[in-house]
Length: 215
Image 1: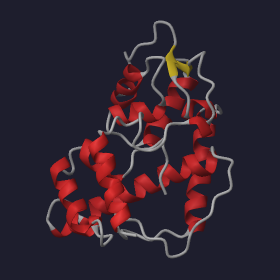
Image 2: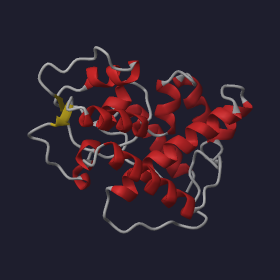
Image 3: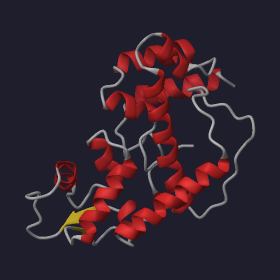
């Protein structure tokens, strides 16, 4: 499960420094066609199995939140479908849905404004990071009237859901609001690996090649 509003496993691992970009693409080249990229990262010693599982679950649950909480289109789960990254940890559908509902309830308790999740954000006049926790202050510094929560998370190499928690707290404190001109619905969001993450064209082409070879 992937969403344009959340970084995928590659972004989480490479932008955080857990895996070097060259190491990631070596794993893709060697294990992509066999759907064993994750196993390749672990077997090569580039990543601990536990770290892979944590990042995988984080990427999965973040994407599930946006798809289930914001996207009103019908969704289907295809039994037996295999991702080219390979099996990391199996998650039952009911667990996925329950976790998405739990996250939505938590965010709504902080600030009942779901538009914060998907639209460009702006700071209130004179809003500053003084007195804020470090993470919240770093996130506030990225709010510029143009970036969305997903783009802020990408810039800071953070998971989107953790960023949403801090942004909703900032909204509850009156420090952050939706930018006035932001009105684009979820269906118009950029596609994964497009403008949001600024991935180079070569990276996209390599992923497409791996996906085609795996067919």
